[in-house]
Length: 496
Image 1: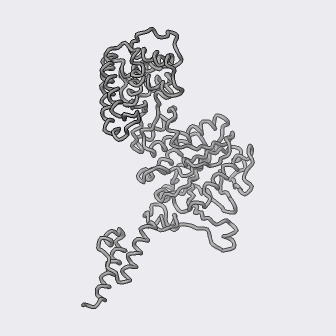
Image 2: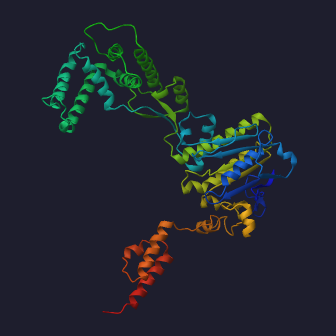
Image 3: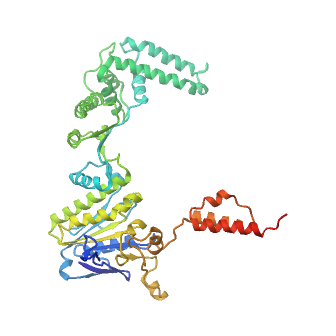
């Protein structure tokens, strides 16, 4: 195990889990739980990456400014490391090695197919955080524009189309075009807005008639037609073949040699028919379907591509972040143990609470501790180093497990003679005390502080301040003091 490490002259102790209770049981399941806190730019990420790089110096060049103190020299070769961050910004991380896994995930990861590890973590998280994690099939939405594309192609070829039901619709379309043209052949844009609803009504009537002609096949054929419209423009021959596949008849025979778009249309239609059977919905009119694990596996086999995507995108960003964080950690540990029978694990998590509401932040360390307990079944020792900006997480750590960083380097602290920052209160302390003692900052936003200060200045200058501006102040002590000042100002004013 690691007892401590130094980076740029700053010592970070990895204190063993303190005892709590009459039987002196360890507070945490992990052998050590260390919290790094400090303002942006204080070096939390740099320190954690430096530690990870130095832990694998057998295969990669370690950090020259990093020194690791081991409890036993033997531990050095039997230790592996997992570094995780959900922060979506670019971070330059070392490559994977036999001893290390660097994991950078983002919300884009939720669009990937679910693995067995994801499903396992979902089950563990469901009760803990109350997740409603279902697999979702997202399909492109069908819109009026899809019908308009069919209608445009039919109307452009109307002289060669044999279906008589399109004749009155073509006449209405030509009439609309004439109403938007000047006598000199230029377009009358002033009437465009008023005619838009008539075009929409024409498209609706065209769709209803086409649906009557195609019957139950209408939704699937329109979806297949919409899917193949992307890409290069189609030839007249290809358009006519697809219109024929949609059910239109022509006065003259069209080419029987299938074009690429025609083959793509037929392949797409077959996939949609198979998908309809899996979803137990013969017409597939909805854009979103919740599917079971068994349906999900069958859908994956269809290789839908842009036709449809399985994902967890219906989850909140916090739920998705939790699932991918803990499933990624579990997969990384399994992967490392397949390389070698490591005995010790160092788990580095940089802002793992990102995307989480305060209610879930309150549960985060508890779930992380349970995760450490499960990892202890695989490793002899588990040490966790966590970086955060959340005062809620800070309140779950005793002061001896917290290292407060600032933007000063070791030489600056030496010259200035400033001692290392240590909180006097943290574990289970009120959040306002945690913000001041651990977060090393105030509890009020700069905007509110400036607004309240302006009220006080106006009162001191003898100006009249509306009661609403004072009642808006949420801190009862400050509100009482401001009210008292207003009252005293009134007493000091001479009566006229």
